[in-house]
Amino acid sequence: MIPAGLSASDLLGMYRKMVLARTFEDQVYYLFLRGGMPGTVHQSQGQEAVAVGVCSQMRPGDFLMSGHRPHGHALAKGVSPRAAMAELFAKRDGCSRAKGGSMHLGDPDVGMITSLAIVGAGCTIAPGMALAFKLRGTKQVAVTIFGDGGSNEGAFHEGLNFSAVQHLPVIFVCENNLYGASTAYHQVSLVTNVADRACAYGIPGQIVDGMDVLAVYQAVGEATARARAGEGPTLLECKTYRFAGHSRSDRTAYRPKEEAEAWKQRDPILVLGKKLLAEGLATQEQLDAIQREVDQEVADAIAYAQSAPSPAPEEALEDVYA
Image (cartoon, helix red, strand yellow):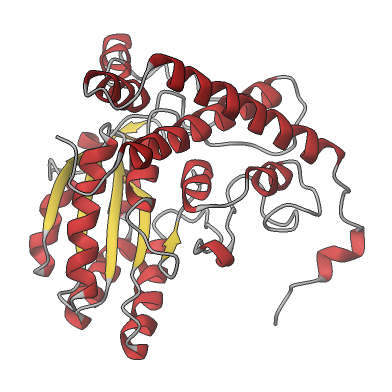
């Protein structure tokens, strides 16, 4: 079902953002394989519905906190593809001025705090932002997106408890892709669902189909409404799947092929595309045109990043605070 208030233009915009995230990461992966990019990369192909569903419900003044797999989150929140790509190439024009790389993307001007590679760290940082919003009475909302592995970190439990007690306007979004690196979630927790942990802190917990951008959009809309009304935090567990490995060197030998193929049948881009076609809200020609436009946008970002200047060595001392 299409949530009330969403126009065909809105839906095509969500489709485009998912295609952008997918194409961006596909091209980044090819660049890494060819040795054309420094560092490492953690991809999120398959998880685009969470990024776009969450960010589509956030207002300009709301802030997002991400982790070590932030590409899709950053692009969905409005970070420029050029700035994101330049950061991956360690160029001066990168969104973190070449000091962050793949795992540390962000732009406060669009409401995304630079992501942190420390697993679960956003579960205490986002509540800090939410506390500031509450004290200021601004009606802003803070959102943190983390993986199922992060739900076993102390920061997760501390963040939920503090946020619940203080009735903070914060939303905890767990991207449960079934594996923390190469370890299955069921091997590290006797609680079947991350969302079940919400009851221990007296807050709502909800399981969401993380492969359906509209389901994520609906759930986040309800959570942000609660937060803005002063009703406190919500824990959302988005069941999703990363088609790629944990990092570029991960061949995913630990995952059954049948499992991966089953999840690929639920590709969030295909799911929304089929819905748009079935409802008569888009034509295949329109969807194909979006892909061509995105291909050009990502190609432009790559060309821009490759030709952008590298930082001078002394710039490593800038933006450092004691």
